[in-house]
Image 1 (cartoon, one colour):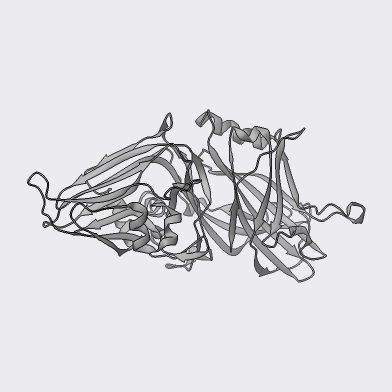
Image 2 (image 1 turned 30 degrees about the vertical axis):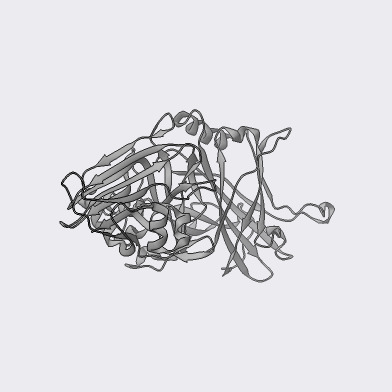
Length: 442
C-alpha cells in the first residue's frame, strides 16, 4: 500500500464546501482507469475525542454517461452544511476555539470490472478548523496498489458490495486524557563522563506538525512478528504554531527526559468486504495501524510539558528499548555540540531527518493498553517536526561541557541513538527512524 498527502488550497465559492478531486499518480481521474470502473471512497474526519475518527462520507463514484462527456465524475463534494461535518467542527472548536490544523483520512478502492482488479489507495488532506469555513477544493493524488477482485462489486445499496475500514478496539489504545509523551530521553551512562546538556526548542515562527504513521500488513493481528509496510512522512494528524523549550543538564551516571502532554492514539484497523450494510461484512485479511495525535495540551500557544531527572517509567522504557536498536551517531569532544537533526541523520540516515522527533506512541500503547496492544508495536512511532519551513526539520541539540565546577571529566562523549527496528518509507527513501528520542552518552 502506498500513501500520499498534499496541502490544501482554499478557494471562495458561492456555496462553500469541501471538494476532493481524486486522481492517480499520473493525474488520471480515478473514474477513468478503465471503461468499466467504480470508485468507492471512505472519508474519515479526525476528532478530538476518544473515537478518534468519524466516517463522514462513504460514496461510490462513476464516470457519467456520454451526455456529460466533459465530466469525469471523480469529484467528491461535502457541503459545509453537512450535519456530520458541522458536528465534527463544533467538537474541535470546543477544544481549540482559535482553530487548529486537523485531517481528513481518505481511503479509496478503485474497482475495475474489466480487469477483475481492485486498486487501493490512502491519502491525508490537512486543513484548519477555522479556515475551512471558506471552503476548499483539493486535488488528491493516490499511488495505487493492485489486488484481485473477490467477485462482482456494485454500488453501495440494498444489494451492493463495498469495502470498508473499521477500528478493532480490542487491539487499539486511546487515552482518556492527556498523557506524558517523552520527546527526548538521555542516559549519561558512565562514571567517567562529562556534563551533558540536551534540549528541545520548538519555535512559534513555523507550523509544527504532529505526524501520522500508517503501517499495513496481512493478518498482522495473528502474528508475533508481522511484516509491516510503514509510511511516515508528510502526513499530519494535527498542526499549529506552537512553542516549547525545555533542557536537561546531566552529570556522570545521571539520566533524564523531556516530555509534553498530548493525546496520542494507536488504532488497529481491519478492512472488510460488505454486502448491503455494515452489519454484513467479512474481513479481507488486510489490516493497518494508524498512530498519531488528536490533541496536545497548551496554555495559549505554549505546549505544556517539562523535564524529569530520571528515565520514563520502567513500564514504558522496557517496550521502548525492545522496539529499538542503538545506532552510533557521533562523538562529541569537550565543548562540542550538535543539533538534533544532525544526530538523527548520523544515526539513521539523512532521510530520517524529515520524520523529525519520533514520539514513542507504539511503546506507550504497549505499556498503557493493559495488554491489548502486542509487543511488536513498540517499534512504531509518530514524527513531530515543522510542517512548512526551510529551517531545520528537527529542533534541539546536545553539548558536552566536559568537567564543570568540579563535576565530570574532560573526556569525549560517544553518542548513540535508539532507532526503530522497522524500516519506514520516508519520502523517496526507506530508512530507520528515531524512537524516543532515546540517546545514550558515555
